[in-house]
Image (cartoon, rainbow, N blue to C red; front, side, top):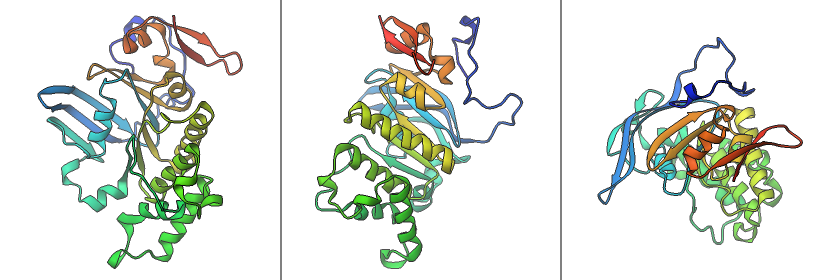
Length: 283
């Protein structure tokens, strides 16, 4: 759905990741109605309505301070909205018991806590906290889930290594393994690629794309690079000045006028010389 700007576009490029025409719409994973957020007398998020579908990789994009991280924290129940309602599977977030919510949603903040002295396997094991039995013991199924999370994130080979000895890209994969081990169907990630070089950014985003497709996970991710967001994600949700500006598929949003409205500078679209995909570049 491209809001507001659809009428200004006489031609639209079909998006191969869009739902087939005539396909029945799946119930939304998240539904936000009139959601807003204030802190210290400042409006950080103006009232917005938004639905997020299941089994998709969705990027929150926009300039610094646009409200991306605030919106993600509301989805993760890290903050309560000042107004409106946020529903997960049709149930208000406040109505979810903590353990049940953690079995549905896993959240990785922009700056995870330090993991000094822990091995990669020990960190990944923390993801099993919503499922642990009496006295917090890990059962056979928990160990199997931990091994599987290490395997699918390609971190099994350094499972016994201290996390603080790993490279930035390896460490980020271990954090993702912890979220996979949690067994949640929705991953919320706040700028997981911000401290990585381009090779490791692509590595992490490719992994998230594979997890979305192979395990039918929903991934909602805050990203700054519009071209990487368009390359890997099914849907883009753009915020500007604390308000929802536009949302839609990459094919719908990768237009000069739309990108200029998001980032506030003139933008042009060029074609990638190999893939033929659209790239946004500042003039």
